[in-house]
Image 1: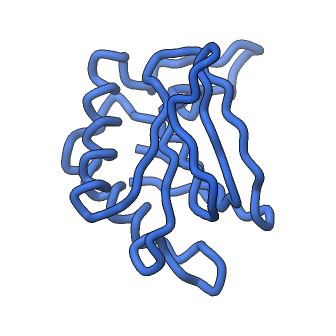
Image 2: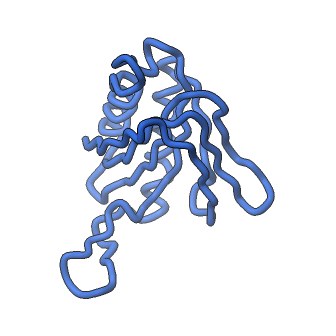
Image 3: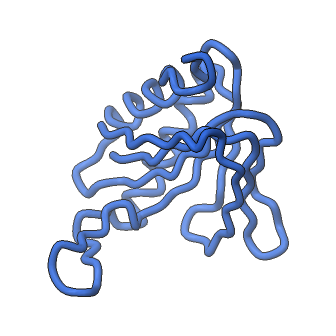
Length: 141
């Protein structure tokens, strides 16, 4: 499981004309990719890492500040571009396997008390964000 995590001052996801998720205060924008070998155990671990990552200002975390997270599924994080000009997606989990794991990460975050907004799995989404720093890290489980 892989997440590109950006510290933001605000962020939103729109599908068509509908805003499916938004945070209007400092928090984290999480682009979440699911690998073919991932499972629920990794989802719970990823949720813990996201919630406790000390990457907000003053080395704080969402767990210590209550800052929100906007989680957006992104299978392209497992695109392999080492050969040729077209990415290979063989390492990315199929939608029927990936969607429950994205939902498991979100559920585990909420069980920890995190405020979580989401995109819409499988939809063409417009993601807007105002990066803070910019400060972006890659988390892997």
